[in-house]
Length: 483
Ligand SMILES: Cc1ncc(COP(=O)(O)O)c(C=O)c1O
Image 1 (tube, rainbow, N blue to C red):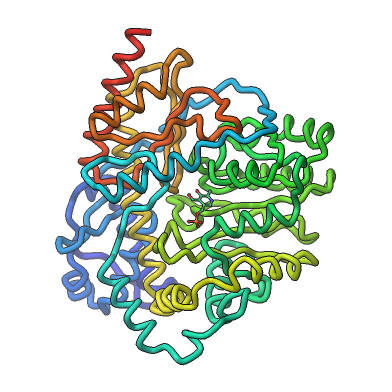
Image 2 (spheres, rainbow, N blue to C red):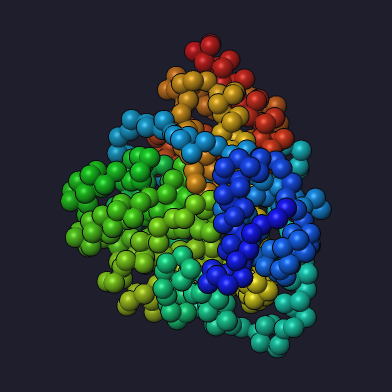
């Protein structure tokens, strides 16, 4: 393949390669599934360094236009969707007021762990990312430990290791969130960050706003501390802000919990305007926001900066994690806590567990220092994009017409709205008997009181997605015919 390169141009050569390739793919000159020249061959043909081609391919992969297949090379992404693909997701739904615990978090989490340990089943239900790049992680972990000084095995700061704080601050700047490393507290996964912030703001009997549906772990935490929950319906553009305002006015909640980017379970991302309006409402009614971006970095398309980026008066606490992008078991998450509450929350963190394991922090830090994180994210995004498209195609093929679903632009999940007359517990049980674990969407609503829905994790191989979706589709058709 010959690509015209202008060596006098101010545009760097890797961007010229990227742009030229992009045009060839978008015009159809390079067809889906077509193999691209190897890095070495292209570098030789156009007389540039292999690193320049690696950089260009990395960007194309990050944009999900090409995909690397270990051992085989780079290919034009196969399952692209037309840009006009639209979601019909529009459930009718009322605000849910919930004042006692009924969360299904524990049961769902344990079921997924059991299935993971036993193997042999397709688990669409969990929020677990697929294991990825194990050898590289092992190598990096060994290096992190072999380079360790004595301090690695001693007590550390409750806010985390200074180097890791700096590295996270740099990642956040790329997402449009300028923070100082001293505002960061490294936590035991993002679940601990959520618990610390909720405990700071909420007392038993207080009202707290969540999106409905939302992350069931957050519902479980709130129930556990005796909070009362207001579930504001989640539309395809985010939490219904008109209803939010009514309830801010009538119930004086103490906290708004939101997942603004790649929402769990729907996969939706709110617009800049929605973020701005939400912050204005929170400021007007003096209600702090807990912004949980557990899936940050897994977006296929650019996303707006977090709400925290437009928060000069410290209403927002921002939470992120490496558990969805790197390794769940290391349990490294973090939060950006600005303003007066920082010290109080840090003291609570110390009382919980002193600090996150210094070994876990050192491994994440070494991974970031190796410069591989961006490439790793590009590959994850590209694989997830392919898998999401395979799942969307399977939904079209196997699911009944009455179902509608969201069109997530990243993350791990699709959310499927099903007809009212279905009995989901029966359906989930029958799917389990046929080797497929699915999450009954009820678990993601306060009090499990939502419309019938499924959350489907698409971080599986295309073959597993195809096989699993066919089984669920057949069950859905049969149950609907009988109802
Ligand atoms: C939205 C959201 N927040 C937080 C978490 C907790 O993740 P971890 O504690 O593993 O970082 C999850 C896990 O599924 C999640 O989906």
